[in-house]
Length: 350
Image (cartoon, rainbow, N blue to C red; front, side):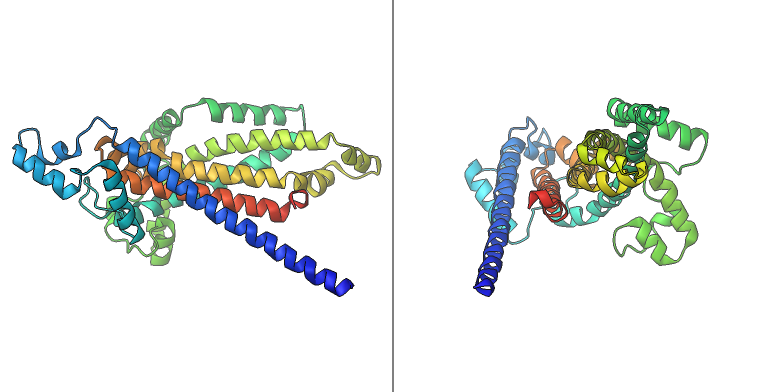
């Protein structure tokens, strides 16, 4: 009887896991489809005429009609959207009107730059934010706690573009500690063999130490700007969670038994806030992937954010849709991953 109950319980758990997975996949598909519909409709409300941008203001009506037919803009919006879905199902994101290249190849070229920048920034922000929040919770009410709150306030208050311009002025123009805009100097940019699209990895694989140092000198300043932005949110939320958790009865009991403050904080309090922390980290990472537009513009970083900005100014609908779909997919997938990790690491969610 016990063996039968165990088998039934295991089968029921597999069904629950399957149901959760199916629900997650359906939710992901519906969300992406809604995002695609909204972006498609919004891009067609732009006051810029993409046909006029291609043919010019002095083109004849016949030329205008021909280009409009070639772009498929002479059909109704539902027909245009249906044709876009048909091409999308085949992996075709269309042709960018700005670059003249397939949108998929443009995204494959620009996304590694954004991925590298956002990954380094979230690592810096997570290390700094978690360390600062732990110190603030350990020394609540001290100057360390005040410093943590000050950094959080600055990270939320200072505009990221102003901080980037100030960093370029100080560390590039005055102190010469950074190498300025771009990912590499021109002397290395055209000699680097792109294997992964990540300049740090490719320069390290090339064996050229001078090229690797040049890549680091270009990368550290935008990483510091974005890292401060993510560190502010991580520090603020984690500090509040740690202080709230530290006021519970089991912490008082551990103190009464003679356990040290660091031991209580790291072994008892911190694991209990790990679930919300994972969610914050995933949201911060997703925000960096989608919100690095201003930083990429200031530092001339050839990423998806800058590519999307240029496409918006040019009313380049295929490029806008492709970039938005990529960023939305990253955001949704990171949220799903955070939910799964929270479910696995936090017993109360199970």
